[in-house]
Image (cartoon, rainbow, N blue to C red; front, top):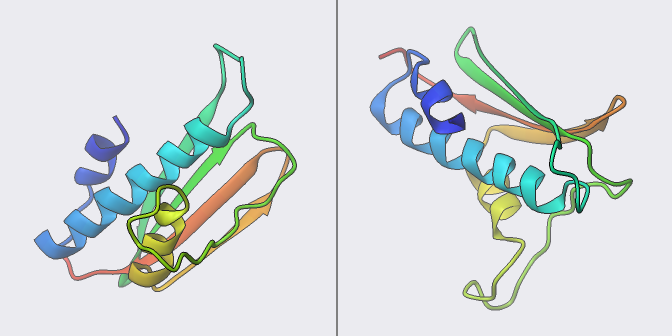
Length: 112
């Protein structure tokens, strides 16, 4: 569902692929690190074009831990690779807490 939502944004083909990848990584992290045992966990996704950038933010009801960029010596080691992709491919990214835990990224784009 998240990939379909961001696929509707008018960006070039290359940006669209990166946008879908990074969005799915953040949504996957929200599902994985959200509150355990809650069937009605809420995750929100906001995506918008702003000038020559696209901004995406994913929020969840997760615990108090902040998202952490984990460096691995072995890139095939499982876990922690989603934020590495975000860090390497996005123009910038960060997190905030405003009642929910939110992780965002900004990606440069050209219009489709």
